[in-house]
Length: 226
Image 1 (cartoon, rainbow, N blue to C red):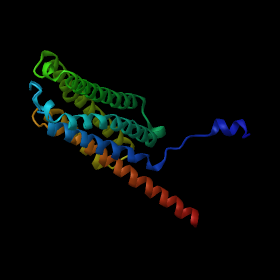
Image 2 (image 1 turned 90 degrees about the vertical axis):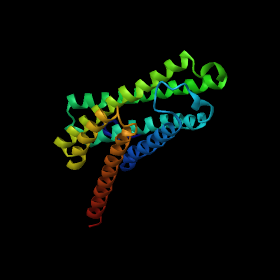
Image 3 (image 1 turned 45 degrees about the vertical axis):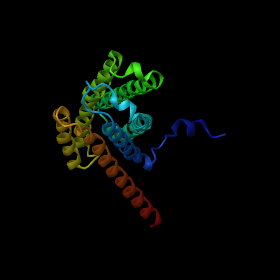
Image 4 (image 1 turned 30 degrees about the vertical axis):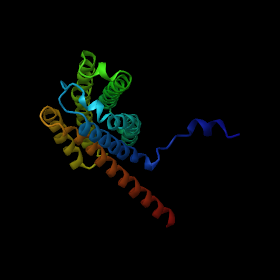
């Protein structure tokens, strides 16, 4: 039996490959977004004619969202691990809270769309064009395109601010986060595909973190061999 001191002093180490979580999140969310956008009209006032032809594509997208959400939680953990003792309580609260609120709105929107699909499979004639469908469709649209997008912007701005002061990512990527967040904040009303800048930005951060982890691991290995 190991000594008590060994157990209390043990510390879990974040695996270097954990940065892959951001890449996985970006890939899954982009795939889900593309499936939904190609199947569902952007206008929230549409009557649901897509349910009869594209329901399977939308169902596949909704099944990808939970896995994207899990990967995003891992990504948040990777960023907090890189901050370590440099983590500021104020920015950490806004950073962590905006990430969780983004996931909440993403899951809420997906759950509503999933409910529409189940209701359509049960009573297709009564759902299409009904007041219930219009309400559910408008709620899902607001949750995703208003609240989730705003939380994604806050997450990008906060993460970029922390990156500028701590250097956990390249400075150019932090500045790009500011620019892309403003584009997403104001462009989401006019450009339907503007949301893709968020997963693309997460993808770039994950690539930088992954490369940095491998560089550090290679350096440690070289010193050990010497």
